[in-house]
Length: 528
Image (cartoon, helix red, strand yellow):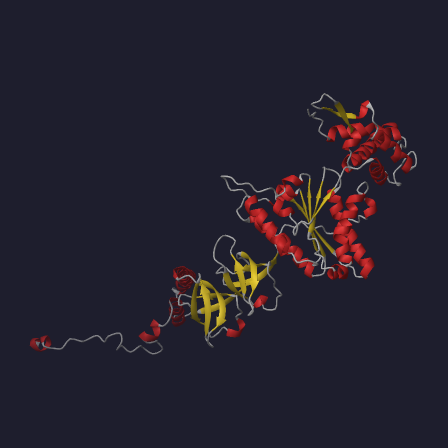
């Protein structure tokens, strides 16, 4: 019997997967699908209402709920970090310039100066991409997004417009010229040579018209009303200018009949302060008035005032470019129907005589450029070139030869009647004058030109021993006369402030300042 007990088969416990749950209990697989919080709720639901462990289960449930909420927050933070790391580890996108479509799903794109034929994301309509627009390409060089037009880029000048609408630009930095396409923004834009346009970063497409940014604005907005009667003491110079400029414009048929070449320009030369600049401005105003009276057509004037030294530049070729640009502006305005005047003051500073030497001089290239532009001016094109200089002997002879600057007009110092006319211009009727303007001007002029010892300005001793004197009237000019009147005004204002009374310009006040103004504005160095 004992042996039979020993040989008895032991009882085998069923595995959890094979165990059958008691009535009302869930299977092992179902319980694996539940969370810890749900398991606690399941156990609590199986206990009686008055079970002593029920309060412990409630406490356990709160702790499990807090732990699960913390785990959920940690899981969300890890997911965000994984997303950020994935973005940081992804390859960079490339930005290119869209040039043109190739197929329904391909585009010609320039990236970093290299051309590519790229696939286009089907989500992007190919017709929505415009020439010159920036596009975003992924690591496979596929267009995935349009970025609009760039707002930055190099600025270049248009040299020529090709027949098919493309633009030829010149590189002023010494590089070779380029031919560019117009972007979708400039397809209908009216362009012309000399304009400045902005390119994309790849320098393949023109995006925007900048204008004439490099042009220094030297034109006068409005030319001052200066009738010939407002210029005193220069009757001969005024008549010479009218014969040189006004007659060819007013009598074109007569000039054409005699096959007479119209002067391209003239030179005003003479002592400083005698009205050369004033004569240049008066030429533009009076020519416009004469044409308006004769033909009834009002041509606006374009007066380009250039001070000679401001053209000089330290960069090679920049001064020549400015000279070329001056003539381009005049030609453009002349084609638009305006009367174009190019007035160059202190012309000897940029058009001086060229000299052979060991070192390179800017005059060796600036003067030939000016000569070339002068020869390019066509007659009867409403363009007048006026040069003004105190030292006409320093101007290169190639500039002053016939065919370029055809007339040389001397602007002399005013004589006594001319000085009186200038005094009458500055002593206006609107000023508080102590006597009639004509009488006051005559008295001041006589005091200015009097041959008295007090008016002796310079003593000249000749080799023969003879002595002579230069008087203040011999050195009179429009600028000195204007200074006399202004100083008299200043003295009258000061006297009115001190005395608290109304004062007037008197003969004594004006005559007192004749010598003072001349002494301070004229060099008094004797010559032997």
